[in-house]
Length: 275
Image 1 (cartoon, rainbow, N blue to C red):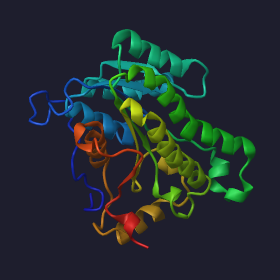
Image 2 (image 1 turned 90 degrees about the vertical axis):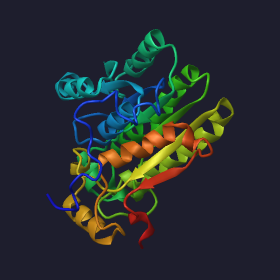
Image 3 (image 1 turned 120 degrees about the vertical axis):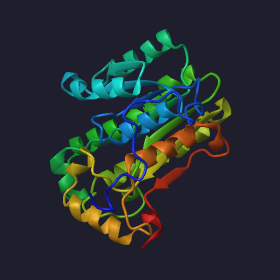
């Protein structure tokens, strides 16, 4: 394992309630959407949020995905595990109804899902299909709006909403293609939700990680070249890992970020600062 890929902040194999950091988010309850396997950004967030003391609900895409996600949910002691395909009518409503029935409230949500049809993702933006663009927007952006709408009534005492973006929303990144405009829309959505929900004490953020070797990222053409370029150009000379992203999300969920909302937070070893 090279210095560019070895974990800087390893994830715990099991949640340790006796850890000295295990109280920062004690008493907070949150939903994390997007866990697919142990390399996924959503799992990095879930593991760190749980390590800091939060109680968690997780989702899995379908029955096939459940066999990978359930052991991870058990590993970190998640309280709830539910199916959620945002393209299937009624499933998101069912998730929030169960949270309402069992918890009665919600302190935070983490939205870490994105999708684009492969043919559209690998082609030029100008050539993308209407159906492909609509599906990418539906899954990657509009689902965050839906989650926010359903979470709002459960955040009567305020709360935090976090989604995941990428630098390709701000600058043209080779081979990111159609997902660039989609993530730009997601970041703009973050700002508008922050403005609309601020009076209710709800803060909204987009986190923008650098490239990571996740299953979702494997769909990007020439992704290995993108990773090599990130390592070569970032001030830290390395990639970030999912635990570092998780710690950032834990900070945003906690009281330390109370003076911030609507922001896009870069966690990319400084790569976005380099021309």
